[in-house]
Length: 306
Image (tube, rainbow, N blue to C red; front, side, top):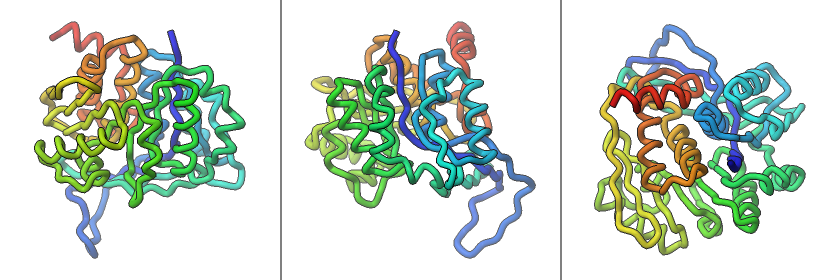
């Protein structure tokens, strides 16, 4: 079986559970703060590992205890960490996350070592791309590096999946031509296209991305499921499993990872999206980022009880 390469960010999440999100100028109290490994790239690599696929994490950390925490967490999840570069003069990325009583979150990221991830780093570890089958990218590392990696992966005929988060104020149009599958949520889709978040607006937004050269578009819609427009096929609406959400952190990352795992197993994009929806429905019922991601054994148990 092939390999999955995740190119992206590694952070330590500082999570605060609050009754409600603070309004502008408001001070609120929080009982405690927990430190957990996170970062969109690391979350996705962790999820791929827990779901049983061969995965390597490619990114940057600082020479500090938070970087060591990431290495330990990813190794425990079965991730190959040989592609993680330690930048001695930088600190490991950090994310400050508030989670309200409804399970919704708000995140502020301080990139740290992630911001130093360069095209030169990609060139120095080119073999990681050469030896994989699927490349997953996000946007918590420099856009120049994302574009460079995607272009290289595409030239090597790899399947490129982009999770376009966080959406930058100016999205590099060149990047669209290197993407095989783009997976925004409804808010990210609206930011990418200027359309709204309603279903009819999403249809228009999908048309925009198709015109830019993206062949397969999968928009996650939270509890409403997902909207899939595959090349030369009709739209498919993927239903979501009804659960009580307590924390949506890493749900999108787990979805992206699960999608790649199923594609590696040669499932159709629709089948992969259905599996990804199931995985993310488990993540939202648990607190934390990597700590909320289920193992393949848990997924099989859930499927057996249906």
